[in-house]
Image 1 (tube, rainbow, N blue to C red):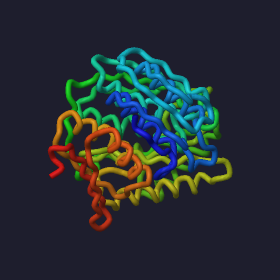
Image 2: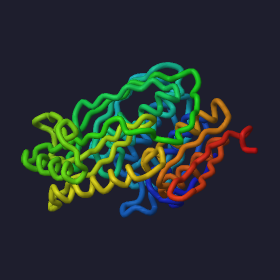
Image 3: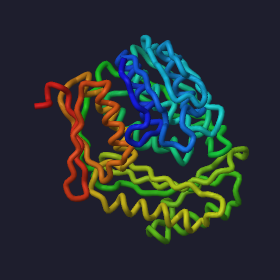
Length: 348
């Protein structure tokens, strides 16, 4: 039984999600105490409980402590079962995080699976759907995983109500690879999602962003939304490079001007463009687990670079090392971090 302290490192929900994912993949049971101890409301909230329930359904696990506000959980996994699944967070809590909890196990299963999810698709505290679709999923495909994502309905905080699905085709064996450079930028564009808000809000955000970055024409887009979606406001920039794509998102809030939203996004875009690391901070964080699984299967080592190593990332490294026989090494040269992940035979 692996024993984990949920208050270590960044002390949030990622310790739980990574543990659930790797417990399903490896068959190792775990117990975790002080879940989300560093959050304002510690313990399991609705989206975290949905992650636990989803994991139970996928592998038939036995659990103790799976209830709202619980700060202790015992999870004993059974065999992973491919199939058709449907999970509903029931709030604006992130359904993308629920998907990322069960995805590693299903991409190692013996046949294809379909997962339907309902809840928040665009949440300030979680990867938006477009990030998974454009940044994360392409890297998984290079590992050998077949994955198709579909956004059926946007779900914004605080109303939620979003719908998305994932079709997952496992590969026989994952193959790790290096991501050391992002390559030249092939396309850069912005999109404004302004649901159930005055049309002028989105127009002002895009116009201000265009002035800041020198973007115009087809680089400034307003996707069609359903009439009954929202309210919600998301300004996104996509930078499609030769090796990776980065999706940067800023959320509009009541009392925050359109120009301020655009200025915040422009600042993050310029920071990414001026960096030399291949992966943005969020993609670097989320890439660690599937990369480690590939090395667990196939051996060897793999590397990637990033401009920032967050608390989420360093915490994730520690949890992955508890479940898998891999080691992480992170070295900083100037402004760039080089992260190496190695299986046992490559440690020397």
